[in-house]
Amino acid sequence: MENQTVEKKAATKNGVSRMIFVMLSILLEAALIILMFTSLNKYAEWINIFTRILGLLLVLWIYVDHKTSSLKTPWIMLILSFPIFGVILFLLIGLNGSTRRMSQRYQKIDEMLLPMLPDHEKLLDEMAAKDENAAGIAGYIRKKAGYPVYQNTDVEYYDDAAKGLEAQLHDLAKAEKFIFMEYHAIEDKESWQRVQKVLEARVKAGVEVRVFYDDMGSIGFINTDFVKKMQEAGIHCRVFNPFVPGLNLFLNNRDHRKITVVDGKVGYTGGYNLANEYFNLTHPYGQWKDTGIRIEGEAVRSLSVTFLEMWNAVKEKDKNDTDFESYLPKTDYTAREQGFIQPYADSPMDEEQVGENVYISMANKANRYCYFVTPYLIITDEMNHALGLAAKRGVDVRIITPGIPDKKIVYGVTRSFYNGLVRNGVRIFEWTPGFCHAKMSIADDKMATCGTINLDYRSLYHHFENGCFFYDCKAVADIKADFDSMFPQCREVTEQYKTGRSAVMRMGQLFLRLFAGLL
Image 1 (cartoon, helix red, strand yellow):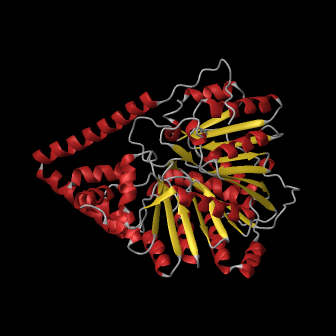
Image 2: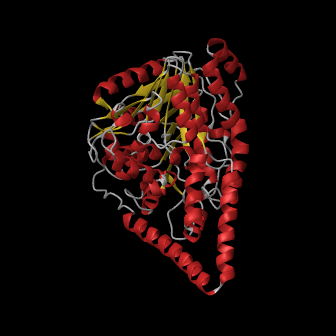
Image 3: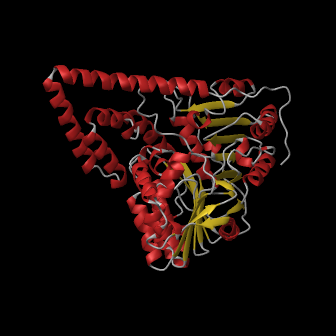
């Protein structure tokens, strides 16, 4: 890839020092609270009794909660074993951060935006006439996430993030009205600076440009002065959930979405962020594998709505949009093929795990094969059961994970799930060239997904995510071809994890599983 930079512009300093300060502040606050309760318990027996009763009531509340037992059991064990520490830790991060005020804010904006999407119920009927399994998944997404299925849309698949970036730069340069960009991580170096150069040129041409990024996801790359830098260039910029000192209940929820929209006509999503490692300009974990899709046509409307939701809901005091229609234009595009396309989003502000349920449905509806690729594999009992049951039905279920990890502890937890899966017939492959960051699934050469959603608790339960489900289009065949090219590059570890683990490894992995919900 051509290595262009913005001349004489220093890269924004990262926020690592701020992150360390904030984390130390939070740990200190938590330690002081624990110390206070521990000390009080020594001097007043009634406080000790109150703490234990509170812990017991909290355990009962967790037990009857509707969440999966995979998330509940570790908290119950921790609170019963260490009441003070367990209760305080659960109140800080175990509540999943869905404060009432934030939930109400997102509900309010969704009530305005989602009705602006077309109904397209007839398309669901057309899908059902072709394939009831695919129509069932699309119907679930429509009913529970609010996003419709479309036709008159073309999807182009990129098996390499660098190819996606080149296509994005080409489309960004043609923008006439507005550009939306929402990413979990932005690094102010060569890859981003190529994007910024195009954005600045479009701003000078009168195009409205908005950039939105997650503070925690980008904190290792840029600091909050990045916002000022963007605004000086005429680019509107907002930060999701700034990482600041204080016992912030919303801190555990991050924006993991990756979206680009150009004029409401062309959109991009996939696994890659806007940082050098995603495009193999740097190699911290061997070769980086990531994928993405380009959408052109009517389905881009859903990507625009997903962006507008976050832009308008994240901060109460921001000056928000009053005219959404100007960003949701009708398209006169005529697609080359008539497949079914359904961009969708998932939010931790409700109790519906759309991302997880789509993946489970892919396994449940598959007849011949179902493949997954994910950088992390930390799954609930429900998903474990669905994958194993599909394999027992005779479906060829395969999962690709990285051969070189980016986080060794998380990698250890990922491997702890192998044994339970392979015992039921699921095959596990590790991609040997390096770190595989792609998030995709495919079943029976008919339907596939591509987006931001990992097979882990954080993506499935804590983060704002987005993806795209598609059926009966060329992109499905392209994804299948990419899977077929990846398997020869993998080492299959299925047999190794059936019987090959030592007792020490098994004990270590079981211990790590207790903390899987926190990773």
